[in-house]
Amino acid sequence: MLRSVLALVVIALVIGITTEGVGAQQYPSKTVRVIIGVAPGGLSDVLARHIAAGLSTAWGQQVLVESRPGASDVIAAEVVTKSPPDGYTLYQANDTVLVLNGLIRKNLPFNPETDFTPVHGIIQVRSLLVARHDLPANTVAELFALARQKPLTFGTFGIGSASHLNAEQLALDAGVKLTHVPYRGGGDLARGLLTGEFDFGLFSPSTYVSLIKAGKVKGLAWDGSRRHVALPDVPTFEEAGIRFRTGGWFAMFAKAGTPAPIVARVSADMTKVLALPVVEKYVAGIDAEVMSIPSAQLDQLLKDSRARYGALLKTLDLRLD
Image: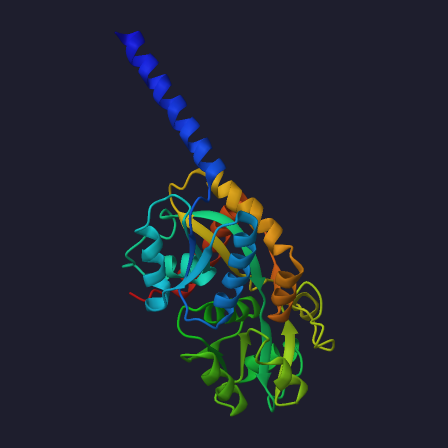
């Protein structure tokens, strides 16, 4: 009797392994969806469409980008968690969604740490330290010195955003106290800096390179591995004495439980897609860097990001609910 039971168990395991392997070989056999949590037209949308086009060509199957904006990406994430774990519903998300939301918000309808499988890292997004044009500081050292003499303000995309937490980290490392001025969007932030509503901030360079060149704002430091090609006089963070990297990123995920061979297949093909000249050109054009790391490395990046931001949030004693 025991031998019969053991034989059945072995047969079941073999069948399971065989089925999973066959499934991966046949994947994808139908349309694949890439879910994003923003409206069409933005950075995340265009990036997802470049990746979808590359994967569609590689697979000979449609790969459609499906926009589900709202509720700080919660709606998009729920679409993925309510889908079968079969690789036909992928999720392009960033560190704010799958790291910060889980650390700051208690009542999410999903668990960012356990409900998703890391598939492939896509890009890293770097920040530019920008100050109002009439601030009496032309370097990071002068900014900190000024902050020790009088209160300075920094603008962000809102409480708990990456721009908020990175500025708080900057203040902690420099041993200065700053006042937070949150905004609802990038347009408001740019107008606020131009009109002197706050002193400085850490932002994507896309809006600010032309303003720096026009002398309307100051560029104090760039969080890149080398100086920004359009701003050769602006030092890197390292050159300016800033010890940390802002390290925002976008990556591809699937629902937890998606078979490992399918995750490996998607990751391998994304490596090829991210090396395409059209993709590299787009990524360079948005002042980002191709990351292109497989599942295991992306999983470690998630852990490192959660540890870093978790320690900072504990120091700040910050939660949103």
